[in-house]
Image 1 (spheres, rainbow, N blue to C red):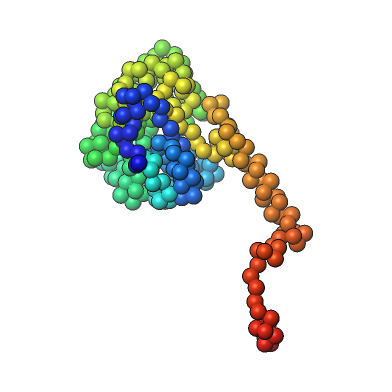
Image 2: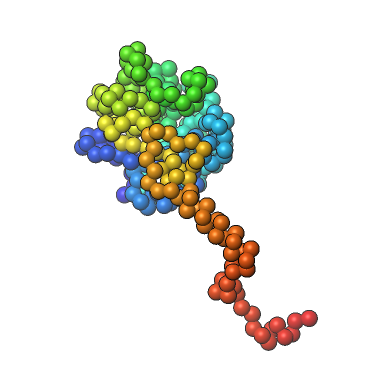
Length: 275
């Protein structure tokens, strides 16, 4: 059955864990969807894992719409959430609503995700008022990497921890139906998960969250530039792919591919009449 925002609400109420993975193309989305994941996130992480950027800041609305379109064609059951890229919503509440609408109307997403807590509650409320479901994202917010001075765990001091708790309460009040907690100490994330009535989706925030999200290239061992501490590698698909590519190159070089079974035939009487 198609997963919706109601699925998230029901899971929280019944104590059922939610699963979310990223996807950025049709084929991968189809495989992840068929595996039974609850939600697919078309993350602005595509800037790093798909486009080769150093961070997510350079990702555009056009990038997000392009990839979201592909994912929604492949995902028939999972709830598809699309990230709002840097400067698509920070500039004004109006821009936030317009760009969120584009991700649904043009990208065919079913919800959007945006980074930031109390400072963006007006934006969240306006998007929700436009009948667009919102996932909030607090803790370590990658679009703010330049302000943080790098990818760093958030909420380790009393002041910082209280700020994240208040952010969680604020985005819930603004209308977000779920909130991502990134790089937050596990015990703090557990407190937040018990404090708010909306599901918390952790990434580097421990098992006390109501659900988890990972970048699929990380959990499959396909992205070797950097592996966060919180990633569990379920296989080393990158090594398998490299071995297959090398095998193909070797077979072509030595003439063992293509074999006769990989080719098409033509009748000898046709050949005899050529030239």
